[in-house]
Length: 88
Image 1 (cartoon, rainbow, N blue to C red):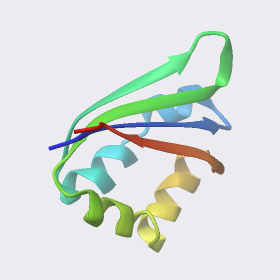
Image 2 (image 1 turned 90 degrees about the horizontal axis):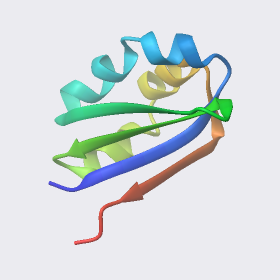
Image 3 (image 1 turned 60 degrees about the vertical axis):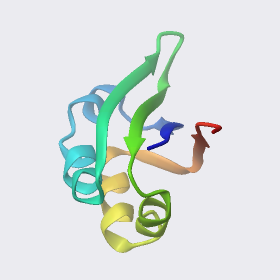
Image 4 (image 1 turned 30 degrees about the vertical axis):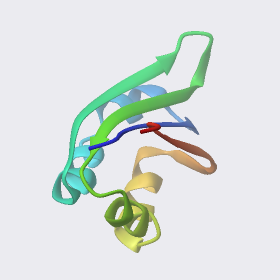
């Protein structure tokens, strides 16, 4: 199960931190151990680390309306999203 790091910009860091959407959308995809991070020098930059059971499933979900709606709710700036996958 690879560990994935994702970072992106958000409109409101506190809203993003307290949002239930990560668990709601990633949980059913088999994503576990989600940890959130903030940039103490830039309140619009955040990141997550998570364990992903099925990368293909998660990447496909990134293209569907449920994920787009969750990202919009969380104030994610989609074009800033960078996903890094643990090298095996």
